[in-house]
Length: 601
Image (cartoon, rainbow, N blue to C red; front, side, top):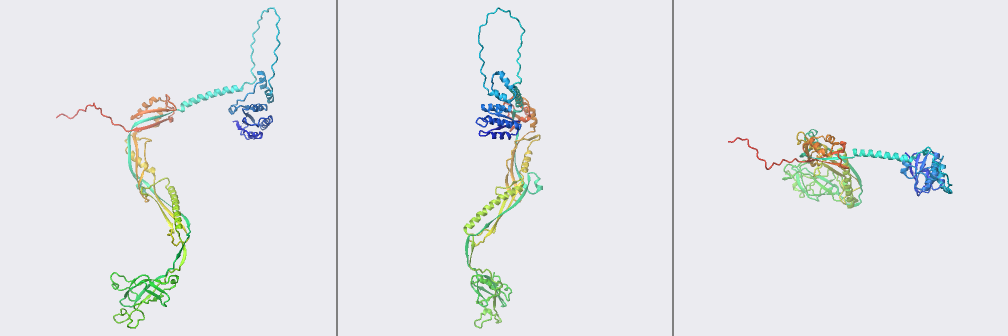
């Protein structure tokens, strides 16, 4: 197919030659706008013609500019007045010069140069009129009959191609018009048949239960559920900016009391009571009042010797009187000096002796104390980093943002694991859970805290079910209401989304579902469409009533306009069914009651 190349108003002759060269076909129609100056000189036109001849291209000029047309003809280029004329091959005829004979001579002249010169030469001046003179009188002459000569016009050497092409196009256009009209009448019409049918309305309200038990899910009104799980985590760095002075802390330990008194010994050890190292250099004090009740030689105190409801006890907690880490250096077995010992050893001379330390035989017994383990927990005063209020607020916001991001990740992960199934979430939010853990926990405001990596982890669980399986169960419940020989009305089934009333990540789900439809006699709509093809629209009522005895009304509408026949193809016919509840026949008020068949007494 010839290529059409459009020149721009600012193109030079080199640009036009490049456009013709880059055309995808040897037949090129160069569209030259009236505002273009590239072909306004004979030299540029000859350059374009020379390039076309040398490259084997057939270049035609499409322009409305008379000068461009004239110069193009003179250079041997074909000229067309418009793109449609170029595409149809209707070349622009050259202007007449010197009468019909001269025009024929120009048309048959050999070469484009002769045609161009004929076009460019001005028309010759008309010959002078012959002189008039009076004819001499002549004698009357008897006319002689000569044979009649028939003048036959010699047809031109070349027929007018433009006229033949136009006639051919006219015949072709008429044929296309007729074929298009036939195709339009055959394929374009469509019909919509609306049929109102008396049908029985049906509705169900079903309770569908979901379970992970495959055997139980195959029973009626049960579907199989599945629990999907996912995990996700994210971290961020928490660097505290606060400072906190920490006071010195005292070391603590426990001291143990023992005695060689045969019946044991009991006493109240008051708070603050001192116990020292053997050399008296370190002093520990009792942290709270403690009742000591011990048996002889480290054995438990005899039953009932400690008093009602009091358990035997040999231990008391003591704390270094001087806070600091030095108390941690006190070794085990160092705290043995008890200045308040009621039964010191060796025994003091009388009367300084405590008589309660003397048994019935007059023997004096002592009480011993020691620390079984070294003290711990003593710290020196220092300043440490702490979590300021701004730190805790920022970290809390970060945790909230991370949790939201992890929730989105988990939802996508669980959705992918669900494989197209639906999540079961009841009104209380059960059925889908996401649990977060923050490690290490965020500190309180002004609490000691060192830089740490905070890890936020999330664990998600969700129970999923197959909505298609649930819908099938509901339709099965609806089919149980259909009368034998009938079917559910096609296209009228309504199954609103089920409501999850109960769900658990154990897999238990309860759904409340409903559905509505109509029960109608079984009918093949495709066969009915075939029955209606090509028939008169007025006969549609009778045809449909023969197939559907419960039809109430039939309405036929056609597009794009009403015709006297239905479409010739069943695919162009649409049947829409409307359903109404059947009405019970109303008894006539004038009807007489049926006679009773019961015999008279």
